Image 1 (cartoon, helix red, strand yellow):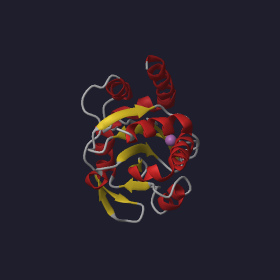
Image 2 (cartoon, rainbow, N blue to C red):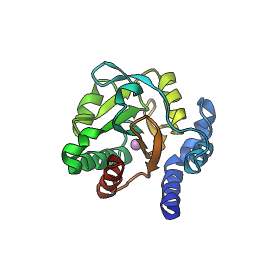
Image 3 (cartoon, helix red, strand yellow):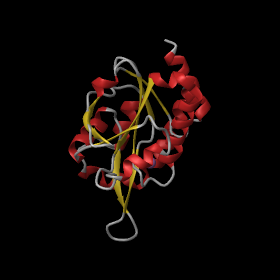
Length: 202
Ligand code: NI
């Protein structure tokens, strides 16, 4: 467990990188604070949300009760970490076979400005059961804060361009919406399958 935690810490610390400077402009705790709270389980993790899915339909956390819920915060322009993790999630669900019915993968965009029409096609490439959620920047920030998920825009080389530094962990929520734990970025599909199987059997 400790080795695992240390690994996640390292990956997250490197991911936050230069985003720290702009953190003060956002209505969120510092990256370090969020990471500490998540790592050491300070305060509740997760909570209610009411957002809009990739088909324009309003969705809330309540409707996923009875299923395990995977929650991932990311954005479609993310060059590497998001696609790798989403691919792992998709592969783990494939590996579960029919049991995957008991798992709802949820992707919440932290880039609602750019993740509009592209969201549906993007997620379908990873797994058909993905629900992609978007909303107002304020609503998304609120949900991310409840999950202790940090994110901040990092300006790109050309004016108007940006990337987003963000927490890339994979959250696992229980059938009653309760927080079960998180898996670090770049968790292998095999490991993910194992964790899901174990929790599905409970
Ligand atoms: Ni990403």
